[in-house]
Length: 502
Image (cartoon, rainbow, N blue to C red; front, side, top):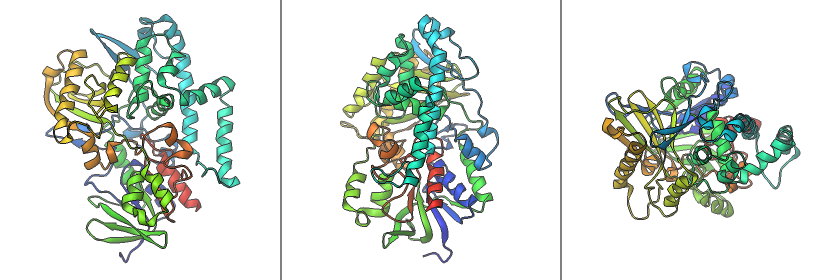
């Protein structure tokens, strides 16, 4: 065991782990962050895939919550919240639907070509979604009590959250609560008549989750993704999303914290039901007063801690956490003549198209006509591909990556003729790569599906939504807990706050 113990060890140098570490260091704690890869950032990395071939590996944008940026004194171009570009649905035959949600009065001319009624309703819809996202932001900032048993002090923040919901007004309060359990197909039907507009909204709702547009709860995921993006379109980070990680690491080091990369944690050390430190894959043991894990809850509890240290019923619950990754990324280096317009592009012409793409995942198949979301940075084009389930029924990811690559490029070429001819080099990240390289169990970007029975006070487990675990001094701070999923840093901040009050 190390002779120089730390006040806190954080497992994982993703954005949530680094946010938690910064708050701890700001409070005067001696903090060590351990990262299994040789690069910090987790999902928030900008990497080179060849000479001049640099891309944001997993996420096309990232926005830490503004209060976190202020609290931690972060600044620079990576934190300039510029207006988002267009969100463009490619409809085929050279037609497209352009949608705007920021920058003053939303532009509705593109919508009007499909429906005059929808164009009139669009500003009202954007205003409602902004209010719903603001409520959700408050919810993510509010510690969830451990239902059904909690103290008055634990319940008070929840009472304030309900008051915030009530202040939306009777009509919007009803809309928000009702929409969370609805499918996005039903939700958008209450707003719009145009299939093109409804499908474009539905694409955002299913982004990053293994759900279809007709699945219950996608009204909630629409609000969640709207909040994390600040609207529909990605807001590219100057210099790449890795700049956010660089700023968090620099801020931590200024505060006296330490980040060690290429240091995989093999085990969380437990003595008499209390976390005492970690053991690395190298065999080195490092002690600490508390341990935070930004890894997914199931891996943290069942692998790093181990079932033998946990109550049997809790082990069963942890085993039941649903992780269902079905996302792949295809990064393409082109000759610059790819023909893609600027903005966030989606291939989501109809709701039925999206649902059929999801149908493939139900049966362990790769979508033949996938939902794509595409961004470009000069000659580099990044394609988000759904659906490509982690557990394939009739193939192996050792060779199925070529199928994803072929279908991604081929599908995009159908909507942007000539794109395929511009391709020079391709790098594909499969669900297997997400697990093996990026440490995402089952390739799940959210560390646990965003579904109705895994949200708010049931995330990650019913009765354990306050970042604590049965192991005293062990806290969960990653995307798999309340406030997590997406790039916000909320769960890292919340976990550090809970530990400070313990």
